[in-house]
Length: 217
Image (cartoon, rainbow, N blue to C red; front, top):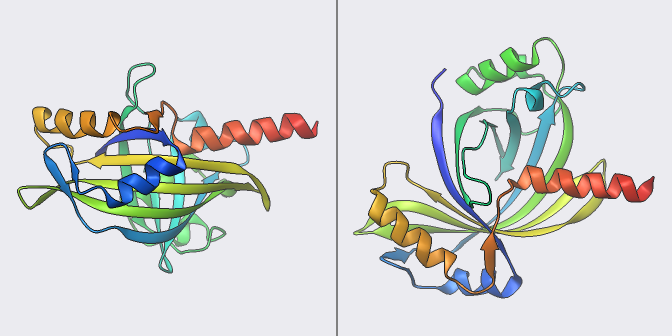
């Protein structure tokens, strides 16, 4: 299996920061392209026994514009408290509905990895995130070097809304030269209303779910 490397800066945001970044013309040495608003539904899947989580992989089925695809994200590599995440990612097409068994998905490295991790066990939805996402291309010299995502997220479990998150993500081209990467990252980190996010969205959502379960108990 050949996994791509995802390099992403994650930051918690307040509403004013999201609004400001939606119209900001530049980010350090980079220009920002027009804002595009998208609605997405992310369903996180695992076996009843948590086989994928035990192997330190997360399985996300994303639906956008009626199209589904699966992303398998491996263990993040970052120093404690750092907001720049590096992790392996394997993607492939999938049906837009979560109850289709992986064996029925179109052939891909992502499907093969799910089948290897889950074995014969079916997958179940453990959480879902409804996202209103504003995306902007990050350009240097006319070349796209990153995607800036401004996300307003609602966390749901078994039909119950657990809370909301506001997240800024900067997905960087892994081949971007280190000085340029540092300049763009530092320009974003320095914006008001943002703070480092050491957790993934799934980790934050699971924390919300744990808090809701303890409150209910």
